[in-house]
Amino acid sequence: MEWKEILLSDLSWSAALEILIRTLLMFTFVLLMLRASGKKGVRQLSIFEVAIIIALGSAAGDPMFRQDDAIVPSLIVFTAILVFYRGITWLSARFERFESILEGDPVTIIKDGQIELNNKGNSPFARDEFFAEMRAKSIEHMGQVRLAVLETNGTVSFFYFEDKDVKPGLPVLPDTYETACTHIAGDGLYACCYCAHTLPLKAGKHQCPRCDKKEWVKAIDTRRIT
Image 1 (cartoon, one colour):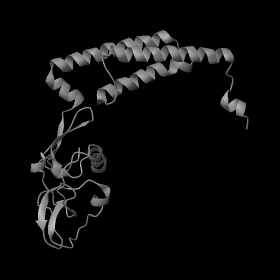
Image 2: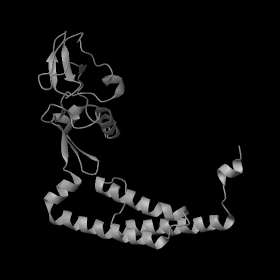
Image 3: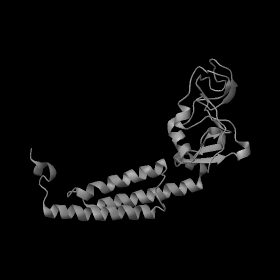
Image 4: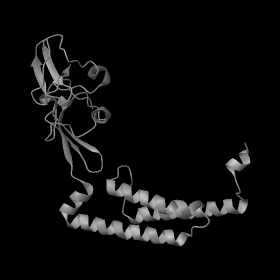
């Protein structure tokens, strides 16, 4: 095994210097492109903006290290992407229906402490991932949440009940949620593990009247700690 061949192949010092210069130039062009797009940051991107970033990376990548690829054609690609992005942004601002098709619409995922279900009785999100999002907001159970909306950029907006209006709800803390069962051992107030519907139940097996699931966990009604 030749480590020199694996690591360097036929790379020369002049070729390495050229790659360094190309990389600095293309990275600068990417930064300028993103600045020209009007974005203040990229913490949360829409699907369309992710596609733009991927396109920029593809256009910038090859000229960084391929000596056969000139830089000017990539700049033409950058310009075309910028014009396209600006055009789409203008259309989205002018026509609400176009923006809806491109970006999607906000989705209500919790209402009055219960998970909203779609027409087929399914929840519109990955449950474990959403529970993690709730815990990051210091939410202990769904009864604390009046409304939760999944925005088009992937963030979740939470609106809370006042302390006096907090309801018993489905716990989202791992050690509590993992006590879920299909056979209730004792009478009490329980929340459906699937849709968060809360009912007083007696010992035994029960089916949720809202989503038809049969897994329950004991509901809690603690106030939110901020």
